[in-house]
Amino acid sequence: MMDVLLLADLHGNLGKLESFMDLQPDFVIIAGDLTQFGPCEMVKTLNSLIDVPCFAVPGNCDPCDICNAIDHSDFVNLHGSAFTLGKISMVGIGGSNPTPFGTPFELPEEEIDRMLQKAIAHMDRNIHNVLVTHAPPYGALDLAGDTHVGSTSVRNHIKAFDLVCCAHMHEHRGVEELDGVRIVNPGPASEGNCAMIHFGDEPGDFTIELLTL
Image (cartoon, rainbow, N blue to C red; front, side, top):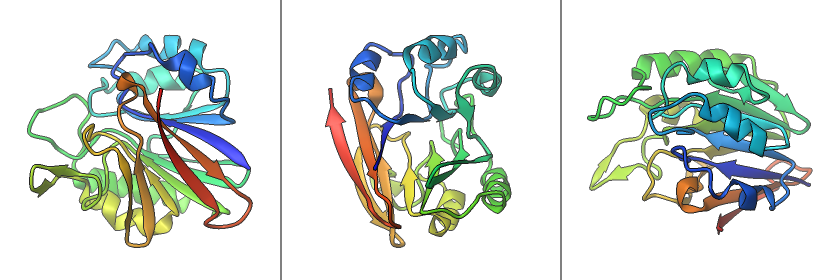
């Protein structure tokens, strides 16, 4: 069994980090919005508070140069890349598809598609295959009023995975299934929300526990 702490939407509020780490995860995934429009030095503070391996993607509210800050920390920058740890393979895509708000880290759908294709091509198929994306896939945990605002490019690639870890939509914390794939949004960590994902030894053997600390 491997226990993974999923965080997202910290927005620079690190007050719950000690409580999160008290859950004793084997490693941590951060699905974007580490900061609230910066500063990128926040990554150093986060790094000092997380004492297990950590995999992160930027969010749309992070400055574009946060990728450089992640690269120069102990964290693994998953944005546009693939990484394998034991029985878990991960691919990451940060930022978001375009929003009406012109936030710092937004990508055209075509670029999201290109980056995911390239990363998936380098992913080792594994017992558990996980997509870490800040933007939810179109059609799951992505409603703004009556309108789906998730990424169509992320949606087009989810069948390559068993689990999609997403964020971005603070009001849509939860777990859904889309195209036979489980999707989880842990809710904003800035408000004490997180998820623990417990991975077993067989394909499809994982459970998701939503927590508020």
